Image (cartoon, rainbow, N blue to C red; front, side):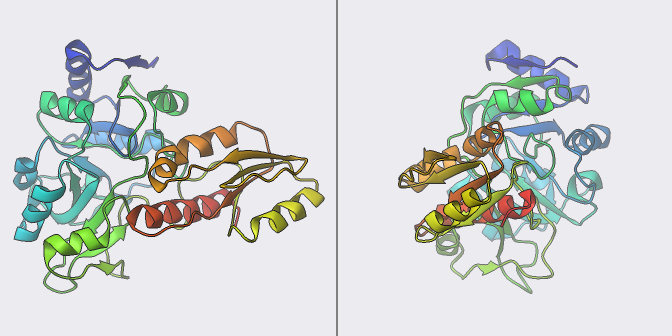
Amino acid sequence: MNARILSPGEEALAEAAAKLRAGELVGLPTETVYGLAADARNPTAVRRIFAAKGRPSDHPLIVHLPCAEHLPQWARDIPEEAWALARRFWPGPLTLVLRRGEGVPLEVTGGQETVALRVPAHPVALALLRTFGSGLAAPSANRFGRVSPTTAADVLEELGDEVALVLDGGPCTVGVESTILDLSRLDTVGPVILRPGAIGEESLAEVLGRPVAAADGGAPRVSGSLPGHYAPTTPVRLAAPGEIELLVSRLLAQGKRLALWSRHALDLPGAKWYEMPATLEDLARLLYARLRAFDRLGVDEIVIERPQGEGPLARAIADRLERAARGSGGR
């Protein structure tokens, strides 16, 4: 299959919807990352996502909806808390885990009785969802465990042989995956964050009127929760600002060729330095693009300064970097 990148006009949206109805895969821009979309009601098409990504079949997918009014088609026993969060944060980077509705394929849920749902805040994604008229399963459009794509070119480079076409929505504006909040166990455990994202526990608790807990051992499986994930093929090492120069010097003494990403310049022969953005918003937006670029440099290791800061984006970025380091074989 020779995929094409299409500008998202009416004809391209109609073609993409037709491909999806025929059981094919489409590259879809969202505000977080680009997704690999399939008809979420078509088990055969959903299985194609797993095959294309090399993703374990018990690893659930997120279903993207045209609007919150579609929730009853995908979930049952929907609590009032879910509607309140949808009114506040949808469209947006928040995924809600609810009890699986009747007829939702187990292929989508990884065999679980819960389903993950969100309404994306990207005009192209929303336009395609409305044209298609139903939910799209759309994990990140990359090989399983590797760096998520944030441009249409990323999707074509990694999965061009697996997709019918890619809709070009420009670079993603958020850059890290959505917050995942479990609401399937409200009566026993309460609301639980299963993956950090741009929407933090403070904002969620304000709407819910109750605290939000961290993930526990009985939580449903969700996307992006494995210890190693979001990883380039080049090993990644993380270092605090006060420790990075010593680490880089030690690695250079071992003859390593390094890419270095930090706030302040380090002029050390053998290390290619790249300036880290000053704001967390810019850092999140550029995180995956920079990891992909580092992978193309041919260096032995990537050394990244642990970002400083507070709040949901700081926690989300730290989470992605820790998983990238473990998934790449770094530290």
